[in-house]
Length: 242
Image 1 (cartoon, one colour):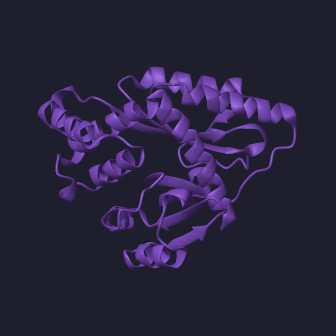
Image 2 (cartoon, helix red, strand yellow; image 1 turned 120 degrees about the vertical axis):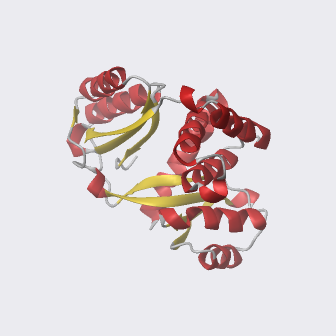
Image 3 (cartoon, one colour; image 1 turned 180 degrees about the vertical axis):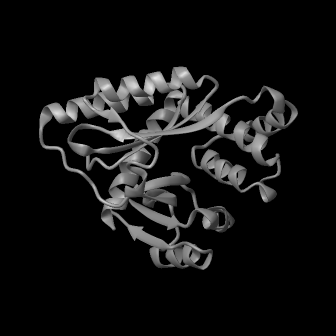
């Protein structure tokens, strides 16, 4: 299962960098607003909000910031006009790419995403063209240096709470859950005061694509950079084995 963890660790480092730039807080703030609009302000009765709160805490968003975001969204529902749209396509050598967006202007977002694919020698596809190559999972990454619990005890805590899989890597543990079980597993880890480096619903590639041509790598990186710099883009998933 090391492929999962390799993906997770790279992604974890990327998210740490994003958090330093503040972008991840903006992304999570939008997700909170949309979740509240769709299901109300109580995470106990709003699964989507519960998953976003878990992600926020794992990214060290202060509790009062989370609470303010929920209250603001609850009191200002009419102003929340973001729409969730997912785009799919291919990078060089058939690398599969999924782009999750929240936008208040579909035309702008579609144009920007298409431009990112085109500039990277790739192309946008139709809905479902690559998503079948991924599994949607709850994914929790725990830094070994920050976790005092023994690996076996951590694994049993996670599995008893409903986790599907537990993987140990050199510097981290990875816990995978079904999306519906994710909030309960996070809650169980929080009850044991286990710090989480990242915790979110994500897309795990079933297989990975190797790139050996330097131009392919350059073009794919260009696409990923353009997407990640776009304020409408919430998350980018791909199956490139970096």
